[in-house]
Image 1 (spheres, rainbow over the protein chains, first blue to last red):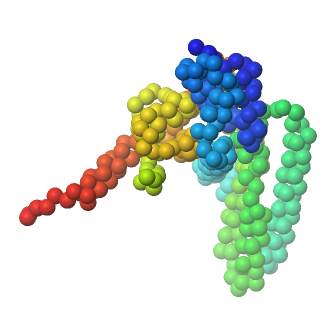
Image 2 (cartoon, chains in turn cyan, blue; image 1 turned 90 degrees about the vertical axis):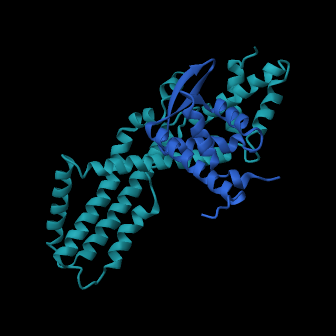
Image 3 (cartoon, chains in turn yellow, blue; image 1 turned 90 degrees about the horizontal axis):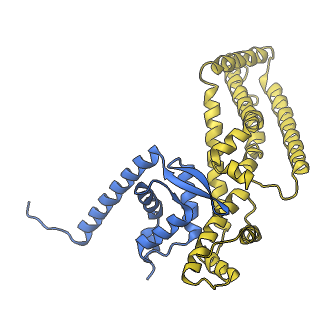
Length: 235
Length: 112
C-alpha cells in the first residue's frame, strides 16, 4: 500500500497554511485527515498523482474549505477558556481563598467610607486601572511578537490565553456603572459602599485571573486542551 | 431533493451514536462512517463534520487522546461520562420524535 511520505506531509502542512489555517493544532488534524483520504484513494488507484488526490480530498470540505472549521474551532476554544475563567473565579468563593476575598471587600469598603462621595473616587480608580491594563496588554503583546521566532508553532488556545480575554466591556463597564449611579441620592450610603466594594473586588478578581493566573499556568492548560501537545513538539 | 433541513441538528446525535459503539475514533474514520451510515442521503461535508466534533469536545461530551501514526500525529475522540449520558438522552428524544412523526403520518384511529 502506498503511504504518504514525510515530504508530502510537509506539503500538506503548507497546503493548509495556504488555505488560511494559521494554527498548528488545526493544521495537524487536517493534515492527518487529508493524508488518510489520499492514502485511501491510492488503495484504489496507486498511480494517482499526489496533487490531484489532494485536490479531490480538499473538494470534500465544501465551498468554504477550511475557513468555517477554523472559525468554529476558535469559538469552541474561547468557550473552553471562559469555562476555565469561571472555574478559577469560583475558587475565590471557596476555602481558603474566600477569606482573602471577604477581607478585600472589607478593606475596599473601609477605604470608600473615608470619602463623602464615592463616584469620583471610583471613576478615577476605574479609569486609571483600565489605562494600566491596556498598557500591560499592549506591552505583553509586543513582547510576544518580538519573541516569536520564524516558523514557531502557533496553537489556537495559546493565542486565546494570551489574548487575556480582552473585551471592550472590561474597560467600559466599570465606568458606565459608576456613571449610572452618579449623583444618586443613595450613592453615599453604607449599602452603596458595600455594593461598590463587592463590584470592585469582582472586577479585580477577573483581571487577576485573565492577566496573571491563567498565563502563569499556560503550559498546564495547553497540555489539558491538547493531549497531542507533547507529541507535536517532538514532531 | 433537498433534505438538509430535516437532518439539521442530527449530526451531533449521529457522531455521539457512532462513538458510543466504538472505544475511540479519529476524525477521518468518523467522517467516513457518517457518510456510510447516512448512505449518501445526507450531503454532509468534512467542513461541517469537524466543527460538530469540535463543538462536542468543547461541550465536554468528547475527550481527546493522541498517538503518533506513520509520519503524523493522530487525534482520537471518545465519549466522556457526560457524553454517554447525553447520547442516551438524545437517542431517546429522537425515538420519541420519530414516534410522534409516525403517528402524524399514519394515525391509528380508535373509538376509545
